[in-house]
Length: 496
Image 1 (tube, rainbow, N blue to C red):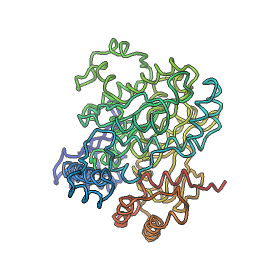
Image 2: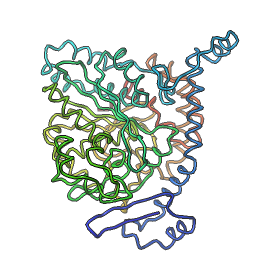
Image 3: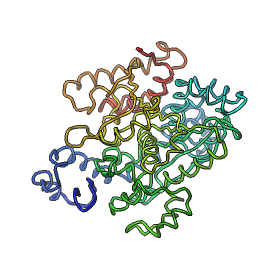
């Protein structure tokens, strides 16, 4: 259930739900002192294990619920409204949604139906008009807010299927669509990591954008990754969240040596063929590295990026994501740095994450500072109000999970502050309980009256309002919705 080791060449904490019974759970919570100093505060890990066990138990019911909810929401939207659906049924003209088509929208997309760019529209137009990619880069470097708007919309769009993503990128954003990829997670034994790539134009592009899909509302595996406390200590780098490494295809906790293999700083592969020549397999998984490269998110995106930067030699790239996608977005340059991919990192323009959980410890922060803070800050972490996900995993003297990067914090009035750490960093302060509920109630009222307060750019649909009502039971869950992040980016006022 909980496995840790500080000897034998590996340092790690491995939380594995489903591998122990109730007796082992009780034994660990009361007497489990043989797992090292990292587990002295066992209560937090115990809560994590219980949550992960419940998620594992309800995995199929959650999946089925999501299937039904998304079908019902698309049934209503594709028929115009509930009244339109009833009318179409009576006239025998009801439109039946089909998954995987460019009209089938995810539950996240149903929470917020916006697809068009706002501040970023002018940026994309300017990049198209630029005489060369060099002129486009100069525009990019001065368009911080516009790029953030583009990244937020890309983070939300990543929740959709490939057909929807391509349709929005090409028809609404007028950008060049590169590809949408379903990538393998060897621990979960499924293609559970999604990412898409786009650039501003097909030739002489200035901007390449990489967007990772975040935590899907009805995906138990995604939520389990968010609340997981497992870490792998990469030598000379720091502790890195094990679940996020697995999501990128960089190991499998069933064989800890796989993380070591993928994170050796002295091993840098420039092509799939070179990787295949170096090793025939990875530990006990039995998967050849060449096969892993074809399936895993990190290797696939790295090779796509490398070829794109050859094709568009002056271009720079941006990485983004919401929730779990935000964690993977910052993990990508972290692993590039570990692998010594300095040529690629020099082309990194910025990383924007939204509602991102913690990915590592203070040592990891120090390791990444030369790559992300010099000569100018490149990593911006956007946090909205009481969103619970950026407060995960727990940050205390035992686990040492730490955020880093420039934090842009927005309160419920969309006032922006640049802070080192968001308030109530672990979401467990008793003194914050009443204010959290009061704020959740205000967000519900704001959702009903926001159009009158903030103008036509404020958007809040009926499904989002319902989500806020349900979120009153646990303030901070509804605040994780992309709706508040889009409104923050578009309507936010800075205090600086």
